[in-house]
Picture 1: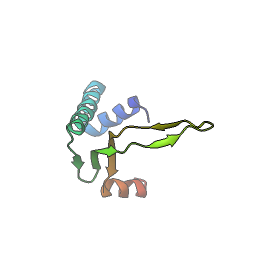
Picture 2: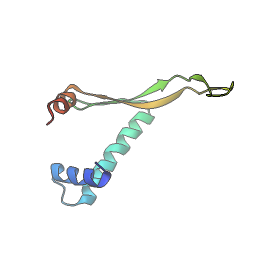
Picture 3: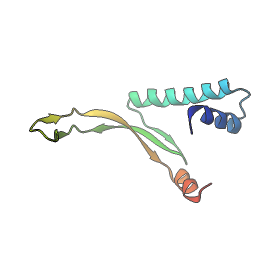
Length: 94
């Protein structure tokens, strides 16, 4: 599903009059989640899932075919964990 199809789906389910209103709702949701994660806060939506920013440890590896090695830095990355309600609905195919 691409963005345009998703906007139409949100418009239908959210009873928005125009696609612009639906797209603004999606943008507001994503911006709010991003802002919360940047601040280090978790976002939990009961039945849907939770968004969190977690620390990903740096790694050391070897470049294939050479003796060169590399090291990555520790960084914060977004993580989503699906809630039970979402898992159950997807498993049921509804």
